[in-house]
Length: 111
Length: 135
Image (cartoon, rainbow over all chains, first blue to last red; front, side, top):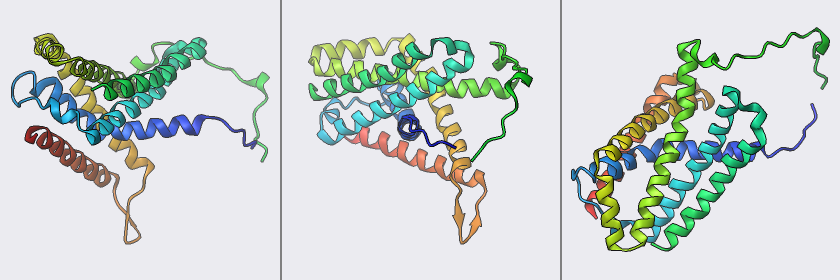
């Protein structure tokens, strides 16, 4: 077999890391910020989000699962019959993850 | 290494119909699993929007919180939560296939690996909830 180098392991690594972060950390945040705080079950803690270790944590929490989404969603769209649109879909998905990462960094720096 | 591939002229490729995922329950659940990533990404966008409002000042953040307390937004978060939990469970199940767990040279059953991950996930979730409540 010819060992042609591709970027596949790079994307797969980000997909995998994002999958782990999403699996372990995302549900608790959805429950907390999306349901428990709006329903007044628990008080909001916005000052906590400004702490630097928390900002760094939020950056990882947002960025890696975005790359997980990009990889998974791209291949799902191809699986459901959008193979002819491969190039623009790849740009949309992986480009979206990069853009989201940049925006997340900017938002967290201006907190 | 040479691969023995059949002569292309003798192949009869059968294109998949676009509704292949409706043919079997397992195909449908596969697609649901793949689509969990979209709901998680939607949550991350909402999280970023909230953080942006927090960075824009007290007034903007209060307004944002008021909007997020509307039933529609809470319902959407409920739907996202269901998909996020589905992602967690299916992720641990697939990881148990990729990573073999051994103790004293004996292979442990996959279900045990999944169960350990679920336990760790619940512990992490409890820790996050406690941390955010303590402030």
